[in-house]
Image (cartoon, rainbow, N blue to C red; front, side, top):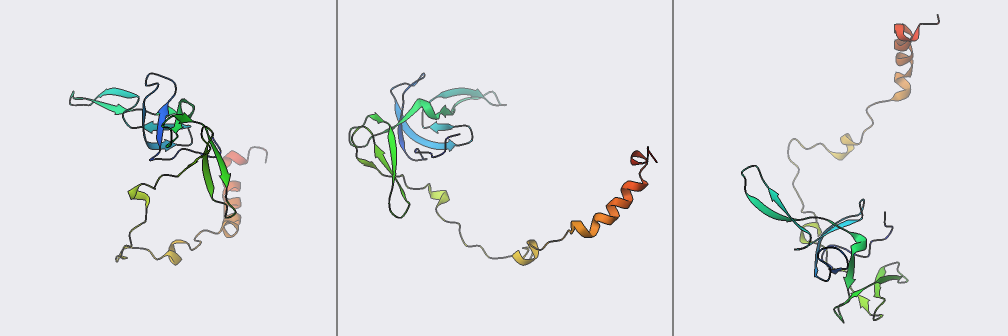
Amino acid sequence: MIRTWKIRPGDLVMVISGGDKGSSGEVLMIDPRRNMLKVKDMNKRKVVDEDGNAKFIEKKIHYSNVALVDPTRGQATRVGLTFTEDGDAIRVSKLTGHIIPWPDPPKNELKEEEHEEGPKDTPPEIALRKTYDYHADKDAMRLARLTMTKYNYNR
């Protein structure tokens, strides 16, 4: 797994190997556990649904097969991270040395909307209350094990 992802959804990347080599597109989503990402209009596969209709979908591309596009030159570049005094990460292009800004977060991840609590909503104090005590139930479990024949072979 990659420790620090330098590519986020909304970035412009160029495919550097594979069938779509040389073409660029916007990152739709990333999968950090598998080191994969989806790029808009890249790595299309034909899928037939239950009704027999065929449609094309984007499949994931491995992280190593894409490179971030330097906005000043429009070419694929490697990226380095530097950190400010506040601890914020800044992406720096290895090609030109210019700073590459982070993309804006997707609109659906900006803020959670406030919601009103309904009559069936459980308050957090009750939901987080501890309801099972292992130590209180330990003796009852020990007695239950003793009565089971499976554990009484040697007695």
